Image 1 (cartoon, rainbow, N blue to C red):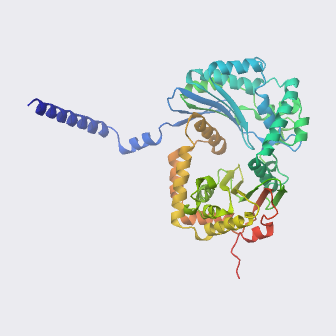
Image 2: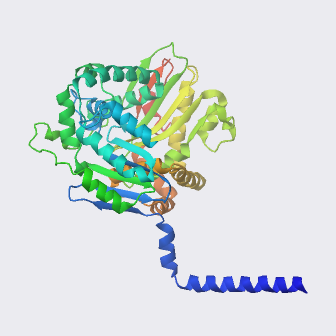
Image 3: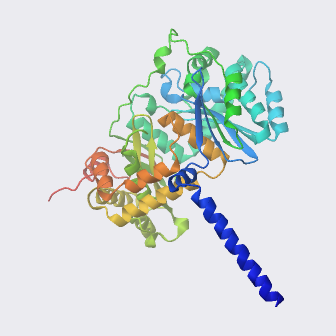
Length: 476
């Protein structure tokens, strides 16, 4: 009898819960519920009077990443000042007017925070990862670094040696070397063709005035995004931005103010080879001109790049891979490869980087160009659906943690002037059809002039004329 009463009681409780859930559900329209799901958590953006934009995503976590994304990089340097942006990144941690280098390091260490920076061709970034209660201190430190770096002569001289050693380390990373060569040949005699670190002669000659001039032109609120992700309150970050980053605007009468303009970088189909038979494998990149961030063709190009994908011998399943290039690699024609789609404001490079033994490099080039032609002329629905699914998955996996989210916010704010929500990106990807991908590849890849950069034993690397001829089907 007791067990029956208990069962009846549980049944009544379940009915009551279901009724309460139905009443709660009716209080929300389907549209309102969908909006809540799609925009959790939202990215909130505020533009301050100074021109500084503040963008945050509050995930209610115990930690946060806050940082400054600056619309400045090696693209805005001259041939004589190439390397200044990266040099400034190093100098930012060498002390300010109110903090010595030791004070800065101790303050960050005592907070248990992590401070970092990096420079690219179009962006310079300074960010801190910390506990959410330490956000005000982290923002104050970042603002101090940006606005009050001492740029002492002694520190500058010491840092020259550090950067020169860093350049030596980069030269041992053959992938970095290949991509520098690829930009050099693709964008000859233009800012995008220069390296981020700059040439050795510039590092040895950059002066304090060069650094001060660059800061006075580019480290300005109108070119900055203050980003936060994690346990970040948007209104509080806006107050901190107003308090610490109320910097003066750029002086447009400055003799170097013309550098603020984005100058188009001409693409040239060409090749560059650095033959060194002492290197055991040939490291090569083959690419074509892609499009800028805001171009609608970018999504189909990203899908096509994802279809090609990446592979290396450690995976051991190349012969069963959906990618024809991976299957060619599994046949012993390559050690590894990875497709890439590198975008800038108005141009880009779409292609593949691979590593081969010297006696198989030409065969693998043949496999690559054959796959390029197939994608341009006879790509199928299965390929595109696989590429779309892989692209959506990789986008989500890249947003694991407050720092990747903060980086995504900053990059998108500089590229698109807004943070594109994932559901919008997903909808754009889902909308792409087989015809869309094929038409875009016909425009950017088929019968177009490629660029190629090779380092190592390049003697058997396919010559440029042959490579160019294989970008189309030749009638016989």
